[in-house]
Length: 315
Image (tube, rainbow, N blue to C red; front, top):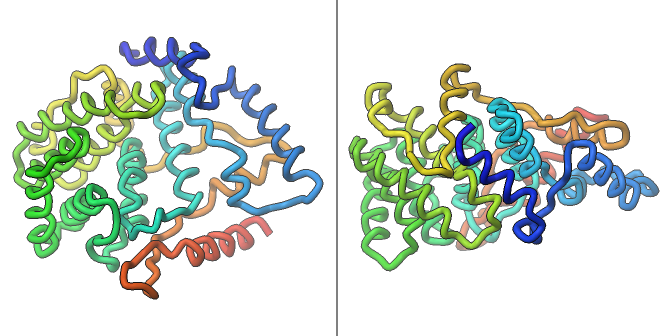
């Protein structure tokens, strides 16, 4: 595996670098600690609140990456991204925004070709976004316009993207918007340049070092292009040379014909089995609340829908 593997392992095993994240020695250590969590919070009450489970039985994403890099296991790497994406999306939140809230989720999910995410987070009937952090709105509208090949939407999204690039914004956000604009222009040289910039500027973000080692967002953007472009145009996009872009993962995905759905990286044992049922639930489709001037994600209704699915499947 590439340099990314050694760098990740070094950081993962350094207590100073992992001070603000949860790391585990191995899957047994993870399961033992989650069993302790179960005994503390769930055993007496027999609580089956799926959102409490999702909050307290934390996502083993960083551990999955560590094991994958240690064993040169690209399938596990792909599945770790899938598990991470599924867990996060089931834990329904909104930030007070409309469907633009899900932009990062879509990029992470598409890193493992989980294409269902885009159409669940951005249902075509919801139309373009207009309530949220400006970057989320601009980038989401460009993505939706490209994905659904909607020229009317692009006539709104494209000028907004150009305006965004003319403003004083972060280089990371600008690189992503510039990449999406390049795709709309079929400018593969520009797309290649900006995809590399996405990797480059992601290392400057204020987030734990482990999350900077693998730029899932750049992987997601790359795979999005594969779905919206012709094969010839897609093949003209150069794979980034940056150390936080995993070429081996791309090769594995290509060799396995880009599997569109991964699987959880472990089967939760014993009393933790409820997590298996939760992670098997269908992705919740985004619903907007229309009772206010600004549309927001209808968190309560989406949670009710997911609980109904859980009761049907589990009980």
